[in-house]
Image (cartoon, rainbow, N blue to C red; front, top):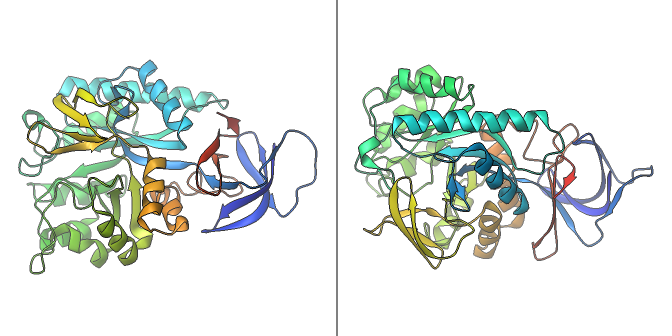
Length: 377
């Protein structure tokens, strides 16, 4: 398959190139590719890499903590149709048996995806384990009855059930044993600091121990103060990769712009979407807790935000509408998340040898067509 006459997003900028795709991977990128066969005329369109949402709990009434394989596959189809071609299946704090089922079911779907190159689903690149290693004060929408002390044995049990699929694990660095956990696991997993009242000094200790990531910056953490900058202040100081929910609800657009100016290469757009995503406003249950969705805002009875109802493609469009350069917004939804997980050689960008996960968009960044591993959605 040859994609012709498109403006291709390569190395952070758009260039007029042709793309040759064979067996689901990009084989060649050049000014003009000779040959016949199936061609896609991309005149007037831009070609950008499929987006990578490393923090999404679910959609269409399903979530990764409680869904069976058929439901997980349905979610993956939804993501792909909306321009998200890679994800980390993100779990929430839950009771232990539910963790067991979630890890096994996600592994089953991942194994099936590896066996089928003709997939039209977003690829599950691993698991983001958000919880249960959080304190009570900044628990957010996590069910407090299932929060746990940090336990290496429990984590190892979950990871074994998943077939070693956990790639990112979120912890509160103020908990007992946090630094030891980070030091022990930093070579094998991306450690993210999350749901915490961490001071700047505690964040520094965690970063020096090996943590490299921050979960949904500003949300469920100590606020930035001029005498105690907390975890927010540690982001630029220690080069922490930083998730940000760009729905216009969790964070003011001016703060989104501020962070992109301060640490553009560390910014990672996420959806943090929950199970009502793709559904009308109403009453739902997420993470075992009752929530309300009204005007795209999801919240608990006490007003606590409970995740978003957007897709990552929505987040990119929102970022651009806030004034973020389109190139930076694209990188923050594709290359930077892949790089944060050491997956940049296979996903997150358009390049020879990488998966042919491609989005065709028009000049207003409306999604016109999606290709997963070269398969038209």
